[in-house]
Length: 328
Image 1: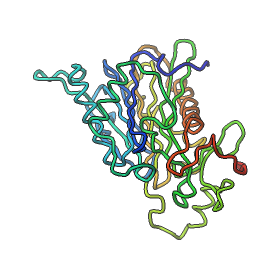
Image 2 (image 1 turned 45 degrees about the horizontal axis):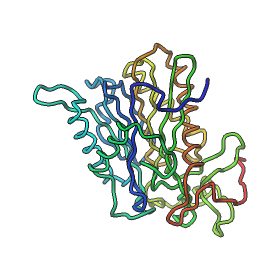
Image 3 (image 1 turned 90 degrees about the vertical axis):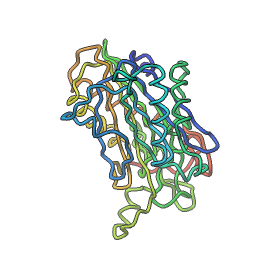
């Protein structure tokens, strides 16, 4: 297993657009020929578009793009711009009078980081597509869907930290698997190698970390929405040949990558959603693809957090030298 650039996985184009000061953006993963797609929605507060069509019992065979966006539910508008762009490129299902692109989407809540009136829209979706077709280099951190992402919001924004978007990919012989993940979780992100919190909720004085799991337990009788909105959303891409049921199972398996390094994961206030896109170039077992997918998701989460820049009062991991809190 060797690390590769995610853009080395043929059959996919990846682009991003963002408003830096508005602290929001979107990320698009495009398959011009269509990819077999699955989805797993694990969080309790999802915001998605056209995911029912991905159910293996339903008719849809291929998806032409997945859009990850900020802006809360407003950000679903970005998918309209992606559809228009792809239609103009004649990418989609041929229905005689035009082509209809199959575009799915998931959003995250970032309205408190920058300007809450700035949201991903059709124009931003179009811009992300142009970025993808221009083969722009990938940027992790405060870009695309991760521009306004935050981490560790259990006790409010004043104790949270900056999240972001990341990517990672692996190759094993001819099998390639990669992940694009936007990290905007309620919980804390742990460094898998050291077992310590890398970014998450801080103590009241801001000098160290305070376990989000402990804080939630301390508030076990409080039922209202303490956290406003959060999520980890992403897409796993692979050149493996999988059917729709297998792609759906792969999305569920890939969620384990979140559970391994985000604590707590999949809370009622997260909208954790993972898509999978399979180009079908190489025969591979589902378990083999799943092993690489989980590892890619883990590493993409770490990449997002380590690449994030401090913004809007949210300190990034690279700028925080607080006391270490272990996984114990």
